[in-house]
Length: 252
Image (tube, rainbow, N blue to C red; front, side, top):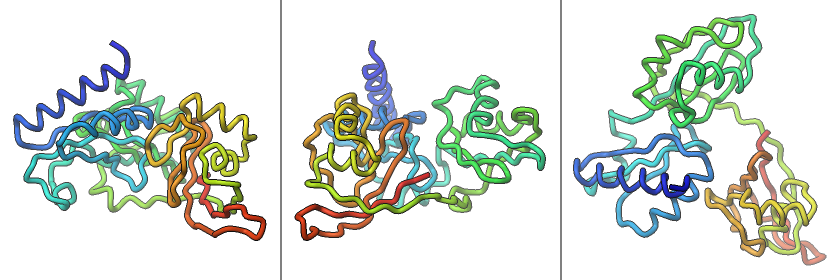
């Protein structure tokens, strides 16, 4: 089976589990490519589902399948969420990176699919973890790199403070075609933007885009794998020279 077929098999299994038990079921964490495939695959099924990563604007997310009786407040009121916020506090002497934290966790035998985003701050990091591995990590993750850490489960994702670092930029394009927009937002040449789109490296609002003439809606989130993400925040109208202007937030 291909990786896509394996993903579809997991989605089928979790849908059946939800329908048979009449309760929520979920996948493990999916990367942006897997999410794109999941979104497209699930369009042909009439089952309630949401992508959820814990943090606002999470990149890595799980698919949660919901029973028919679930309303729009079901997840926010659910006391049995499948993922929890995991806090890792470091000592005062270590300088640790995303790679250090991820390496230490994987070194304990935890697969990447059990973890969501890892958000670094001056005192450590916070990540989202599948509940089944969270307790194990609390008991066993006591060092990262050469430093000591203390790992515990936070009360809720709502208490996690995220410091967003971004810069604003004004862009000008001849049209809102994906090749023009990606080129302007990421300071690519047009040929590089075309290459990256054609190679499946560009995602707009969570969906993989491979057509260079796709019309990008305003307020879109654009991700280029390995190059970061931007959010179109303002439609600044048409300039005197007939070019479309818009403002973006480029995450650092």
